Image 1 (cartoon, rainbow, N blue to C red):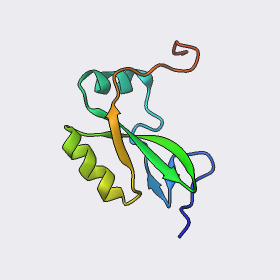
Image 2: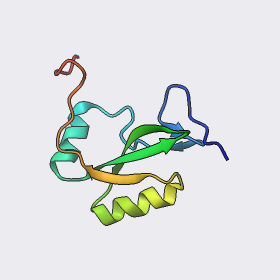
Image 3: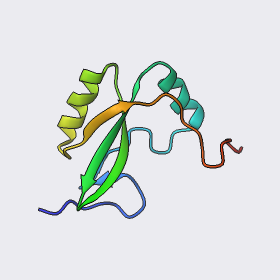
Length: 90
């Protein structure tokens, strides 16, 4: 069965695979500073995509990834996020 990806948002088969989609860099970095943001790899139709899971522990992130049913792999913890160009505008 082929997984369907949304054209412009991090959805696979209608399931969000980036918990922080649309979040501000300030929020992402506050959560990352507390060790609550886990990075995932998702392979769809031969291409690799990255996602995030907000969870209290690596084990909790693994359970969330499994529960999504997309065969995501938790690959690490986010330590810092910066917008393209290195600074947030606004």
